[in-house]
Image (cartoon, rainbow, N blue to C red; front, top):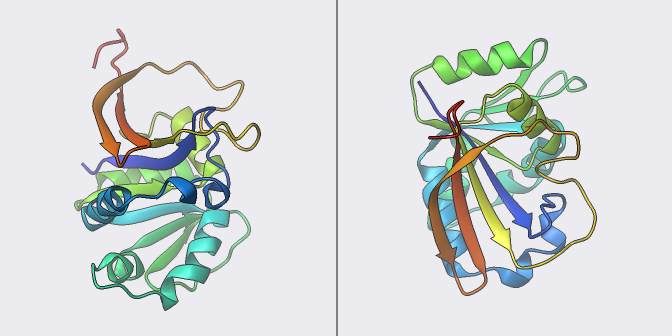
Length: 186
């Protein structure tokens, strides 16, 4: 069974929206190396429409020596959308209908893990339906003050277990969590 991994840039106050406006000032080569390893180890991308459209606009024209662009452009991509009828970025499929069932089936297929980036509304659906197997939160030392938060007000309580804490450069730390068992233990 494939793991579904939510990987996000987040501020100290939990904002995940528009990281291009606040995270670049903290960028470090170690962050790039981590993201490269992450995407190379993944078998598919699962994205919401807004994130998909941003990625589909940017990535097809990108090349790099490390292989990040080649991997992200060639890997299977699944976009959850009620409004898109077709997805034009290479190897992309639109998911409609009962997306919880479709994503559950996708997780049961053989292959490497499924990576989710951005996609705030989709991540809420995944969390609400206990479909997330791992959270990778790249925490930045900034309070953004407003924007979509990873854990929104009104979300059900979730107990997580810290799996790893890894500094990525002098300012950012990546925290990896897994959902804890029903008794609060992992």
